[in-house]
Image (cartoon, rainbow, N blue to C red; front, side, top):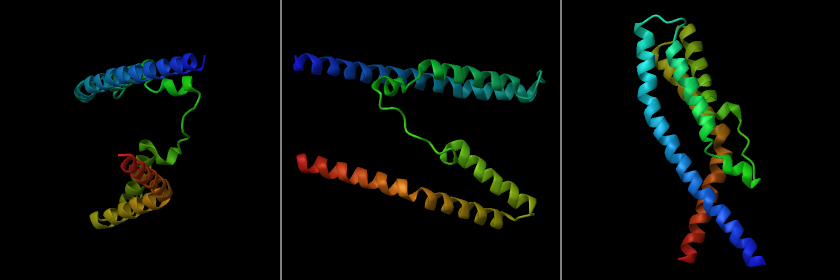
Length: 154
């Protein structure tokens, strides 16, 4: 009976791996197509007046967002019951870009030179590194322990 249970779990796991690989392939093809299409839409929006600024570009983004939800690359996590990781919005790509933009705007508003803007950006990167060093240290430690285990087994 125990072998039957393990066998079912194994096939569920193997299915998850195969479906994940298929979804990653489809997602990458979508991204590969979306890059030139979004640039083309932006170019058309710059040249021809639409109902609103960037209308075609944002329509492409809507399509991309919808297709991303349809593909749902990481849905296996929800079925597995392990759940996702919590994400601090300050450290997403959008969060970091917003932070850098605010530094740039603030320095430009103060009449900053290229050197003062560069120094302010460097300070912001240093601050980001300091804020995330704990996570980086944990990841480095985890990778080192995994490599040590792998070496000891081989």
